[in-house]
Length: 95
Ligand SMILES: [Zn+2]
Ligand SMILES: [Zn+2]
Ligand SMILES: [Zn+2]
Image (cartoon, rainbow, N blue to C red; front, side):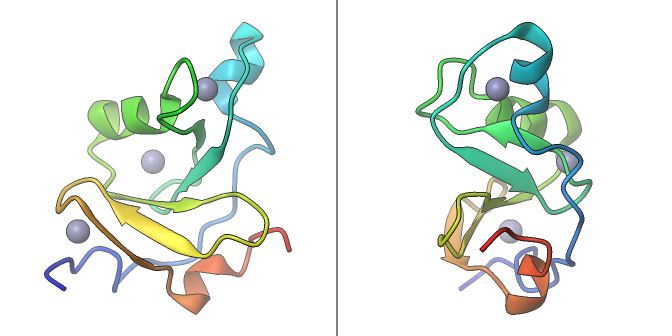
């Protein structure tokens, strides 16, 4: 594993319970991703607006974790690498 971002990710409280941009615009999403840098909640690449990926392009924040109940993985956009999310990074997750 080459990614250092996921290894050093810290827990962050989510800023919203749904995709922030979609909630504002009335859009819909399929799945949610949580940015481990700032707590941004955005929608996944299967959603029409792909706000999680767009957030990465705008901010360069490297790591998201799945914000879906029961899912425990992280994705690094910089290294394009997935991994199990570090336990500490998930302390704000819904069960
Ligand atoms: Zn990385
Ligand atoms: Zn969205
Ligand atoms: Zn962010």
